Length: 207
Image (cartoon, rainbow, N blue to C red):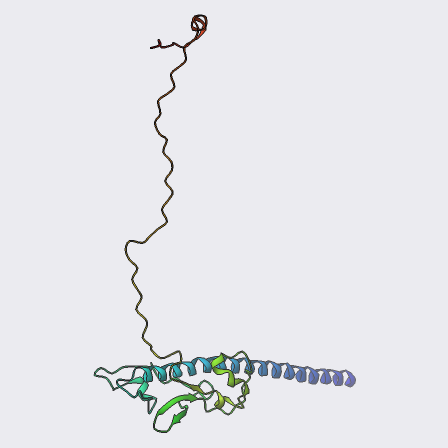
């Protein structure tokens, strides 16, 4: 009886240990998937910051063009009679969960980009947009720098005027079908007297 209880106890310990291993693996898998989803969100949010900074720069009144000196300027650009908004809100950093970002500044120019403040090592190492090809070698998410360079996509640039097409366009004319010319019907030939009698059709007298 004591031997059976001993075996039962050992099996219970084994089952508990196995359950712990399975739960640990599932938890690790869940954390990995959650991190990958945050990486996708970080790429999207960073791109939104880059485009907003580009909009602020490209729509600068007068010359020279200026970058914002704070992220709040993206929410309320007071350089115009009517305040403009280049950004809806300051998004949270998906990796830290805070609305605090690392700012990339150039002296005398302003903020040209942002980056995450997370020191975690990224999972994603390939398949970046060519603009962000350097992200593959980043040691942490702080290396994912979303920087706007003048002339890149994201700033507003004048669109060329589309030339209006003339109302009368030359179209390939359909080939006119030949019309049948009205030609006089041939007059029936006169038949010999004997054949006239046998013919079922009346024969018109000759001239």
